[in-house]
Length: 144
Image (cartoon, rainbow, N blue to C red; front, side, top):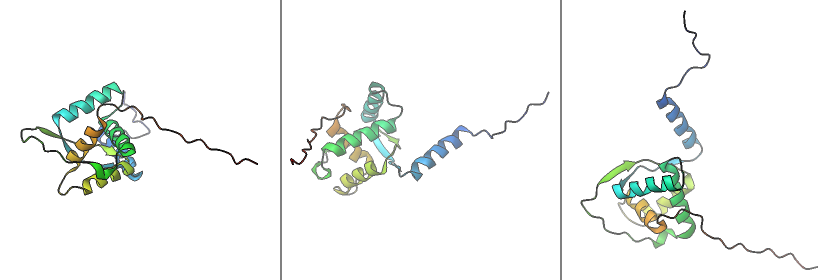
Protein backbone atom coordinates (compact mmCIF):
# COMPACT_ATOMS: atom_id res chain seq x y z
CA UNK A 1 0.00 0.00 0.00
CA UNK A 2 1.39 3.40 -0.95
CA UNK A 3 1.84 6.09 1.67
CA UNK A 4 0.00 9.32 1.20
CA UNK A 5 2.14 12.41 1.36
CA UNK A 6 0.99 15.00 3.86
CA UNK A 7 -0.79 18.07 2.56
CA UNK A 8 1.73 20.38 4.23
CA UNK A 9 5.44 20.01 3.57
CA UNK A 10 7.52 18.93 6.53
CA UNK A 11 10.30 21.24 7.56
CA UNK A 12 13.61 20.01 8.86
CA UNK A 13 14.79 21.12 12.28
CA UNK A 14 17.36 23.40 10.67
CA UNK A 15 14.65 25.11 8.61
CA UNK A 16 12.44 25.58 11.68
CA UNK A 17 15.28 27.13 13.68
CA UNK A 18 16.16 29.42 10.76
CA UNK A 19 12.51 30.47 10.44
CA UNK A 20 12.35 31.32 14.17
CA UNK A 21 15.59 33.32 13.95
CA UNK A 22 14.35 35.21 10.89
CA UNK A 23 11.17 36.15 12.78
CA UNK A 24 13.22 37.38 15.75
CA UNK A 25 15.52 39.46 13.54
CA UNK A 26 12.49 40.93 11.73
CA UNK A 27 11.05 42.05 15.09
CA UNK A 28 14.23 43.97 16.03
CA UNK A 29 16.20 41.36 17.96
CA UNK A 30 19.97 41.14 17.53
CA UNK A 31 22.60 38.45 17.85
CA UNK A 32 25.42 38.95 20.36
CA UNK A 33 28.20 36.59 19.34
CA UNK A 34 30.47 36.46 22.39
CA UNK A 35 33.21 34.41 24.00
CA UNK A 36 32.55 33.77 27.69
CA UNK A 37 34.57 31.96 30.32
CA UNK A 38 33.54 28.44 31.28
CA UNK A 39 32.62 29.65 34.78
CA UNK A 40 30.26 32.30 33.44
CA UNK A 41 28.54 29.80 31.15
CA UNK A 42 28.11 27.39 34.08
CA UNK A 43 26.56 30.19 36.17
CA UNK A 44 24.20 31.03 33.29
CA UNK A 45 23.15 27.36 33.10
CA UNK A 46 22.56 27.26 36.89
CA UNK A 47 20.43 30.41 36.71
CA UNK A 48 18.51 28.89 33.82
CA UNK A 49 17.57 25.95 36.04
CA UNK A 50 16.95 28.05 39.16
CA UNK A 51 14.60 30.50 37.45
CA UNK A 52 13.09 27.86 35.13
CA UNK A 53 13.97 29.68 31.94
CA UNK A 54 13.90 27.95 28.57
CA UNK A 55 17.22 29.07 27.14
CA UNK A 56 20.49 30.85 27.76
CA UNK A 57 19.13 33.67 25.63
CA UNK A 58 16.48 34.38 28.26
CA UNK A 59 19.05 34.39 31.07
CA UNK A 60 21.34 36.77 29.16
CA UNK A 61 18.40 39.05 28.37
CA UNK A 62 17.23 39.15 32.01
CA UNK A 63 20.75 39.89 33.26
CA UNK A 64 21.16 42.78 30.81
CA UNK A 65 17.63 44.08 31.52
CA UNK A 66 18.21 44.09 35.27
CA UNK A 67 21.56 45.82 34.92
CA UNK A 68 20.24 48.43 32.49
CA UNK A 69 17.52 49.34 35.01
CA UNK A 70 19.98 49.87 37.85
CA UNK A 71 23.46 50.74 36.48
CA UNK A 72 24.56 53.64 34.28
CA UNK A 73 26.65 52.49 31.25
CA UNK A 74 29.42 54.96 32.16
CA UNK A 75 30.02 53.49 35.62
CA UNK A 76 31.68 50.22 34.55
CA UNK A 77 35.34 49.43 35.24
CA UNK A 78 37.27 46.84 33.24
CA UNK A 79 39.05 44.12 35.23
CA UNK A 80 42.00 42.02 34.08
CA UNK A 81 41.41 38.37 33.24
CA UNK A 82 43.70 35.40 33.68
CA UNK A 83 45.47 34.23 30.51
CA UNK A 84 44.69 30.62 31.47
CA UNK A 85 40.93 31.17 31.27
CA UNK A 86 39.09 28.81 28.92
CA UNK A 87 36.51 30.47 26.67
CA UNK A 88 33.51 29.14 24.75
CA UNK A 89 31.35 30.96 22.23
CA UNK A 90 27.63 31.51 22.60
CA UNK A 91 25.34 33.59 20.39
CA UNK A 92 22.25 34.72 22.28
CA UNK A 93 19.56 36.61 20.41
CA UNK A 94 18.24 39.48 22.52
CA UNK A 95 15.94 42.46 22.11
CA UNK A 96 17.29 45.52 20.31
CA UNK A 97 17.12 47.87 23.32
CA UNK A 98 19.19 45.44 25.38
CA UNK A 99 21.78 45.15 22.60
CA UNK A 100 21.91 48.97 22.53
CA UNK A 101 22.73 49.00 26.27
CA UNK A 102 25.58 46.53 25.70
CA UNK A 103 26.86 48.75 22.86
CA UNK A 104 26.79 51.79 25.18
CA UNK A 105 28.95 49.95 27.71
CA UNK A 106 31.21 48.70 24.91
CA UNK A 107 31.78 52.23 23.57
CA UNK A 108 33.35 53.20 26.88
CA UNK A 109 36.25 50.80 26.26
CA UNK A 110 38.31 50.40 23.11
CA UNK A 111 38.85 47.06 21.36
CA UNK A 112 36.64 45.07 23.69
CA UNK A 113 34.26 42.35 22.56
CA UNK A 114 30.76 41.47 23.69
CA UNK A 115 32.04 38.69 25.98
CA UNK A 116 34.05 40.87 28.38
CA UNK A 117 31.30 43.51 28.33
CA UNK A 118 28.69 40.91 29.28
CA UNK A 119 30.95 39.58 32.04
CA UNK A 120 31.17 43.12 33.49
CA UNK A 121 27.37 43.39 33.33
CA UNK A 122 27.00 39.93 34.87
CA UNK A 123 29.38 40.87 37.71
CA UNK A 124 27.19 43.89 38.54
CA UNK A 125 23.97 41.84 38.64
CA UNK A 126 25.29 38.73 40.37
CA UNK A 127 23.23 35.58 40.63
CA UNK A 128 19.95 37.19 41.67
CA UNK A 129 17.54 37.79 38.80
CA UNK A 130 14.56 38.71 40.94
CA UNK A 131 12.87 41.99 40.16
CA UNK A 132 14.19 45.01 41.98
CA UNK A 133 11.89 46.95 44.28
CA UNK A 134 10.61 50.13 42.69
CA UNK A 135 9.12 53.03 44.59
CA UNK A 136 5.92 54.13 42.90
CA UNK A 137 4.88 57.75 42.99
CA UNK A 138 1.45 58.71 44.20
CA UNK A 139 -0.61 60.83 41.88
CA UNK A 140 -2.47 63.50 43.71
CA UNK A 141 -5.62 64.92 42.24
CA UNK A 142 -6.06 68.65 42.09
CA UNK A 143 -8.18 69.92 44.95
CA UNK A 144 -11.28 71.87 43.78
